[in-house]
Image (cartoon, rainbow, N blue to C red; front, side):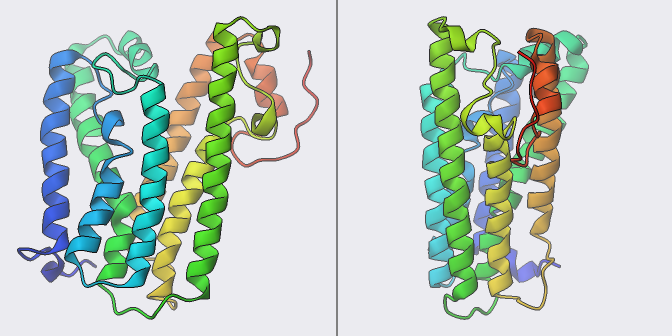
Length: 277
């Protein structure tokens, strides 16, 4: 349960809820007016670091929340850079899946209901909840940094490097694809990390936030489940659903993608079976 005094005037909880509410109030009307449903996407890499910083600045100081804040800012800066180079912050920048969704759901009322409930409200709550482990840690009596914090930090950095590598491989592939390089003729990436997982960047992203949640074990080692797990579970479900939608698009665009699905693990890296040429 969440103690009510965590949300007393001037506490971190009050500021966190205020920022989230403002984000919802901005994202929905912008999507409604522009028919561009990537408004939350543009805040995805920005809000969790801001939430973590709010906790550090308003909660009683402890080294653990400073460490967690640094890790999330690393994540946010990397993801923001990746979004910038894809022109995601331009006024017309939009995730390629939203136009496909508009083709499927032609009823404007249903689209805007989806924009309000799922995109603007649910995803903003999700961004707050995936950052909530730092809030949980800050408001529980805590020991000094320990070996478990070291394990979590090293695992976070490991998957961070995997995600950076996967994103860079994908970026270089699309650059070669635009240049019509022969090795990109199938239309999708199946070398490097993508030889072992169809979505190594998605897998790493989920792992990062599970590890971030695991920091809460340092303050409550006897309890491995607390309310902040809702964010990590929701993110895992969202990314699995998003992956399925992404792959349905890829199957329609690329004739050989179904062979790739049969030969290569969806998320967890594993040795591939032989894929027909």
